[in-house]
Image (tube, rainbow, N blue to C red; front, side, top):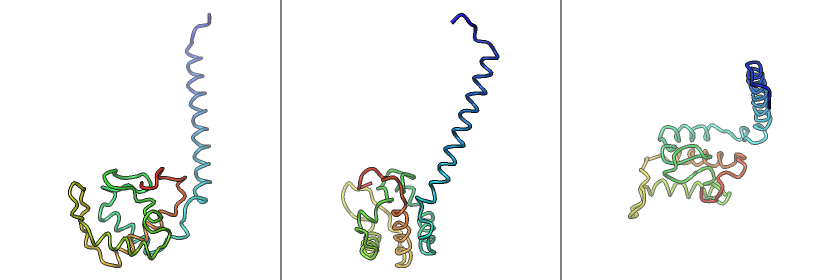
Length: 148
């Protein structure tokens, strides 16, 4: 390559590369905006689910658990806890979840202890409805394993 790298060539690479990646970013953004309505379950959002989300935030569940890959990894992923523990039966999951929350903290030696939040039956049901709702979001098979 006998030609020298000039300022003009550098400028063209800079602007050309910038334009390419800007167009790539716009294209990927458009693709995401088009794909979201097919993957979400906004139509299943109820006041009870919203109350469960409020409880999730108020009690800082994300401080220990992850949900759909976001949060702490101290405790199990809860994005798929409904099919994992409820077997797609909502009433069975509500009963399981209510008993689980009432039993905390479980006195097992060497195990991390989940605190007792003293939730009412209505709050426990709302939180379980929130977890059921999140399990129905199309996440491209996240988490990668069944136990989160």
